[in-house]
Length: 564
Figure 1 (cartoon, rainbow, N blue to C red):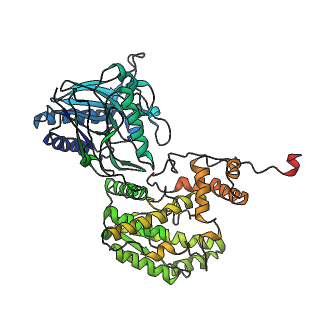
Figure 2: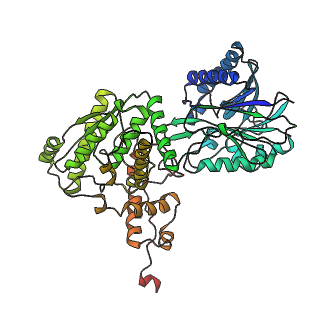
Figure 3: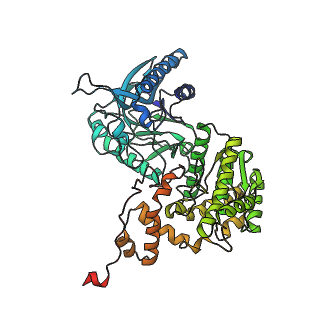
């Protein structure tokens, strides 16, 4: 029996853009056919984009998706591509067998197209209901397995979460004598997940006694980032082929003749793994670029303070859409240092950004003359004037305002609502302060390695961070050192450890009580913060949903009277 050539098309789709998504299916199928593919697989919900959330509940949307699917099947045949078996994802419909006549419910569906028609439909069995996922609320679960016949070879088909859960449709493949398990995915990126996917697929390949072909989508969709990294695993668990991350790519691989006992990997098909800091950097840039392009923005505007956060966001923006499309605004106050203003100007020059200077002293003076503000109220006024300037430029010129705060600041509420928290997107929302420095170092080193000028001024990386809202202010006046703060936040926020567990780790009780109080009091601010790309296992937003109004606080250490 001859080998079967498989193409995994990891592409970028947009939720609701049925026309562009189906055009992409056609274009990449042409490429797969030109490469001699017998089967081409696309990611989960290719036709509709992912995640479609409550769009799935609209019958009009489901009808539009089905019409687009049928038109795609007809066009494939009309273009002479009908003999290529095409697997795509879409939204389907399911009527309960137990309740005949009940309204149809949406399903997360994989569809097999060939010779101008739909040949198979497979509804996802396991619907994730954790972290960023709420598919169980939206979709009806499938119950039937799916095995395809392609060139006389048996191919089992499952969707994303079906692979992660023990039992179910994958376990059913044990008796189906499949020669390949095909998994279509829209698996969001998070740090460390690449290894988890490969290890899981290797385990499943050994369970079913067949290779696993895993195709994943790429691109940014709201606060999610998809990294691609599609791969093929041999029946014994060895990695045979891997696509690069964060780019569209067609991974082509031959399922050997059934009589062949070995399948040696092709080194050219094994894309190198990314350095952890590069992986996070590229994930953020991908998320930012996706949000801009898919929402029709061509430029961004942000405040350039001369500090590390705004410098990193500006560099990421330049990588996402080009430095000429970045508007950086220096908004010095009476407290702004000369080095901060110089660093902001230097950064803009390195990036080729549109650099502007708008002093805020006259506006602040006008407010203070009317209101007579002091202390924190006066400090926040400066941030709010800056936010007003950025939003005014956005309204007048059509730029997307970027918030430059990081995850550490957001965790403890170290931001001014309606001030530096304004914006439509926050690239560093899921990047803690310690990682901000690491990413800046990585980006500058990458530039040096490429023979280019580092985009971020060295002094922006090395100087103590400060909001410069009063004379001589630095962040550590009101916060623990960031390396210590980030350790406590990681344990409390990402690992849900309480006060007792933190003290058992050896953290100072005063630091623990201070940080926990700041985090708990800042939930209302986080709810109003712009969305940003998820890159860790637990991001603020969909991943972590806590009540704003709550009197629960972590129990303090018992007093001597309580001990008695």
